[in-house]
Length: 476
Image (cartoon, rainbow, N blue to C red; front, side):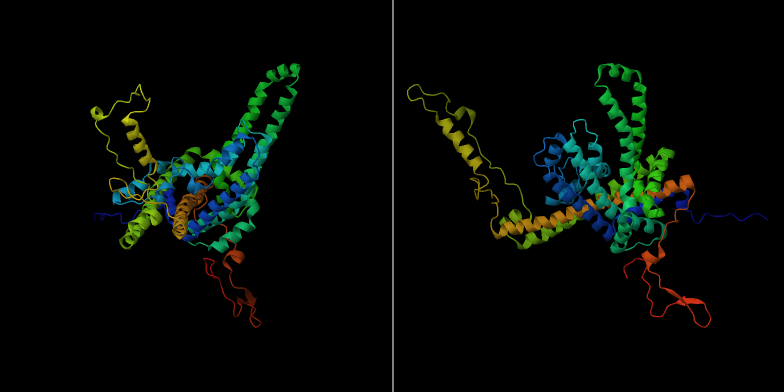
């Protein structure tokens, strides 16, 4: 009897392509708790960096001056650096304008932008023009950032770890409590890597001091390969930390381990499977750009529809001067034909300018008064700058728009932390053979299971009376 033909009814795509787990990063990063935590982290980082910069007002260090002359708020950075700024203050009038505002060319640099923003103080610690005050300044910025993201980044990665592995997520308070309890484990690994680098750097510093003596300079040249060797060791430490630092947070959140294990695992996973890591990062970067476009389309559409609805009931002057500010329109000035313009030559008798000078002055006067004139000579309306209560209204509306920008930036940084957890789980599976669903869970602290007591008759443990269990999301 011939065998009946079999049909493939289901394909386990997650087993064939385990890296598809990174698709879940988008959904996790869009959780309200992740968006808010990411926005809080960016805001706290900006507040700290701004205060530290203001504490060095008189320094001549070029690095500190560069910090004071740039916008330290991620959501307010220039459009050529951050893709999360200009669109929030624009007023798109069509679907194409909304798409254009979301698909800014800088959008494709979004994953790299947030990476460079968070690693800026670490990288500039090795600036060639850095002085002692500048080094102290950057070191304080580093410590502040590690404290902020030790709490916020630890909370986000803990939410992502439980969501990836158990499809459960603690609430923001439970996640922050976990992060605070393990703050040293989250914040110390980058400092340990820098301390290891400093041990090699100190040897070269001492060598440089000895090279101030002429004879020892030549002897140092003979052993210069020693300089190359120490430089190589420093490069291994720093580049491994620069590439693998998000994995340190992911290690603590997934394994519940200490700082030294987080550091060793991040180095091992970074250097042991570099091509796997590169592929996961590229795929995650593609997801980041795609999802960032969708998030900005929704945000831009929400702003545009709100402005459109308000515009139907509001006068144009208030609408475009307060609610949705526009740049003043240029005055259309019609110049006379070239052949009709009198000569610019100065008369011999009076030395006065010709009639063209008066025309030029008139044009310049109109152009200078474009911001204050209510209408142009051609009848084109010019929006005046609001004052008094309208000015306060404009600032308040701008504040709420900036909240939208911060939340969008919060998604950007939240996706970074969430994707880091997904990549860590994949690398752990590839290298250690651990299942993707395995995660550290503190049953007592995290989930608040009800207490067990022995039955006085049978001696069998049972749930205590009137004991309430906390749901798995940690909300109570």
